[in-house]
Image 1 (cartoon, rainbow over the protein chains, first blue to last red):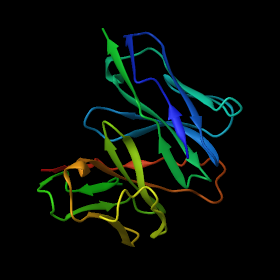
Image 2: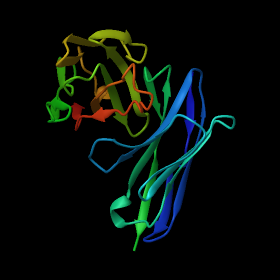
Image 3: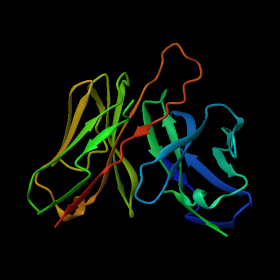
Image 4: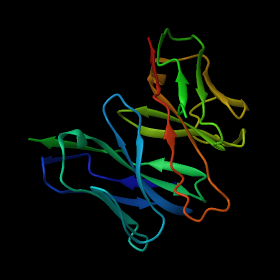
Length: 110
Length: 119
């Protein structure tokens, strides 16, 4: 089977930096993705790490360490609109299957 | 592109009734996934198709659930008979994986979901 662990909730202030961690245990690991979901909305893709290291996309960065089965999402210059749930997801066997973590609810305060 | 289209957006039904959820994936995508989201269990993978063929249905909770993909532009998820514990948001997602492109991300494109309430 597979398991993904991420914190259930994080609170930060506008303009700050926040890091959301994800640890996973799975077989057939191929890569780690991050998705954002606003209340009542659909998950939307943020980033993907297939190799170790940091991927940067604007204010968001994502990191993967395969040897540690660990990754994180880094959000910089937080804005109120970043308040949402963030999910890490492992892809298996060349994107054939995707399993999601339980999600981290990010509360951004003024 | 219109994105992944799901219908109905909301469905309220009574226990024992048949429910059919529909999905139109993005044109050209070769993978289609059905997920269920609840507060207790999060996003659960129910089944996925590749080129209209069901590949893995190990996430389908019971025989009351069935899914079909008769062609590349349409899929259904059916629950019969429905039970209150089936109440959830059901998401359909599609993706495209290029066999030649080295920078695939496997990005899933989700529909807006079908919110099912079984009374």
